[in-house]
View (spheres, rainbow, N blue to C red):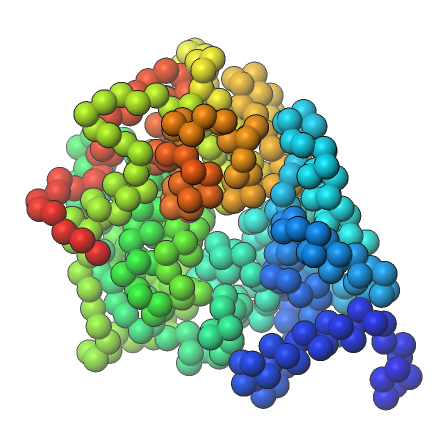
Length: 441
């Protein structure tokens, strides 16, 4: 019991031991209330907050399963509204997808146990797309999934950590940019290419490419990105979502600031002593080719799998996918598999709006509850190791080769759909400047 004679469960005792141990390791002097979280390995925060997001529902072995089962056995219940990250399998369609039964049952047991703790059955890597879970500006939260951390900190202006060395990111002073990345010339080139080629939709792949590059160039520092204010009217939430996911794949900082776009830029002024890097067209070229790593521009290697939805698709992205499918009457070619992941919430909305039928009629396999970072083996991934997967996700283009031991192509969603209909992709996007000479990052 505590000093108010409130019964404290064994689960709460265990959770507090973990929290105090982390506090000791990180030299924390106090705990703060949070109003949202995505927690990596810790089940709940404690009293005083209002919501949380769990990132521990991936089946990592019997130990991970036993841990959450013990919390249930010990009488654990979350104290704040808590969403769940993607787990290892589609909870309802795993058998249809060909997932091994023994693995699926254990993976579902992890999710089942978190639900018994009172968590919301969200099972998504993009909790900011859930109306009930999206935090507000300056709210203290605790999320642990990299793209969710970067998006909530940067785009929304909430306060959350990414790694222990950033436990002070809740303080405004510690959110100051430590490096300036100037993309103005790249944006000028983008504007010229779009006006001359009339390929507005191709702007999509610019954002994950730039996000990947900015994460690399920031070298662990919080960057202030200059130049995109020139096209701020054309930047959508989905563009920022893709930027955040790619930035979080290569950058260790938990946030970025973007002049004219993100909400906290007005809090800071440019300082002469801060390092400024002018991003070159060669660096952008290198970034794109790093993501499009399987492409040999001298041959027409066939794409076997189109992988969409990393992070989970938004309803806007589902709508765009449906529109691209309807753009002409060509069907999907039989030997190219198209699979997308999205949350239960977005799947429900897409079904209500008629998009699900368009996708499934075309031959798209729709998977919820899990994501590409978890689906690393056959039968989802092609069995042959010489196969090629194409994705519009900078995050998956970065992690995919290592996760799956397969080759990855990178392109816009528009190009992905064209390839699914039988086209080949041998040209660089119109927005990508011509490379002048070889350079490295």
